[in-house]
Length: 155
Image 1: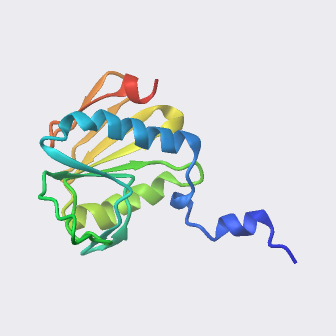
Image 2: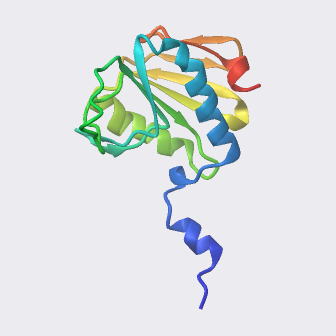
């Protein structure tokens, strides 16, 4: 007996389901952040095991770290300075905000960007309670000073 397709989909967490726009945004944001390669390390889809739990932000940003090509790490334990989450098509916004308040901020992440593809907006949340929403123009992260041209990201 074949397993219905919808039952297979339900086996995955809603955040694990990638879509065309989700993938496109992760790529474009990563490319846009490439100009900060001298100052920061940019890691898409890095598995984290923070003091508050396991998670996998769509993009993590760390201050520049030394490379060790001989010793790889599966679950990185250090919190990023910036975590970027792109809302997946079947994911609830509260899934991401819960992750921000229960995993990211308590573990030491300083700033989180929540990207909402359908509304073409980015919400910046900082651990000290600041909130900034950008739908057009240049977003400037108040913690990292990273600038992101939203017209490039949502073109």
